[in-house]
Image (cartoon, rainbow, N blue to C red; front, side):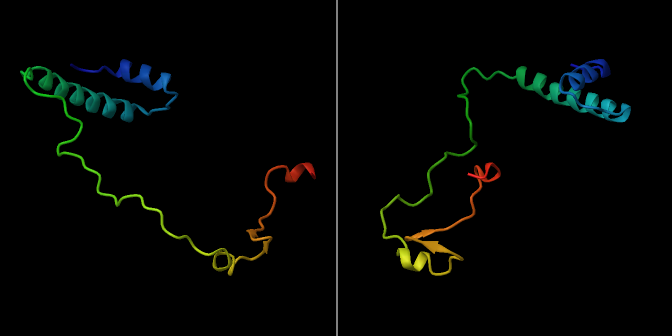
Length: 100
């Protein structure tokens, strides 16, 4: 199946893309090639083949989520530029322009 340059221009317009004539020609060739491969896949007899999302079985390789002791508060705040009442002090961001 071949994609025409007019179809590429139409899709580019819908996507609000400004394409040069060279880009339109290149995309028409590339998209036609992709659709050609899809046509080849459609021609295959895949009746007994289960759909797959991955070529290999997927398994979780992460460690189990276990509760562990965290960093002590004093140690966490040791290098903070400013701390007050056991918390980091940061500049106000939300509402800063309102003067509140």
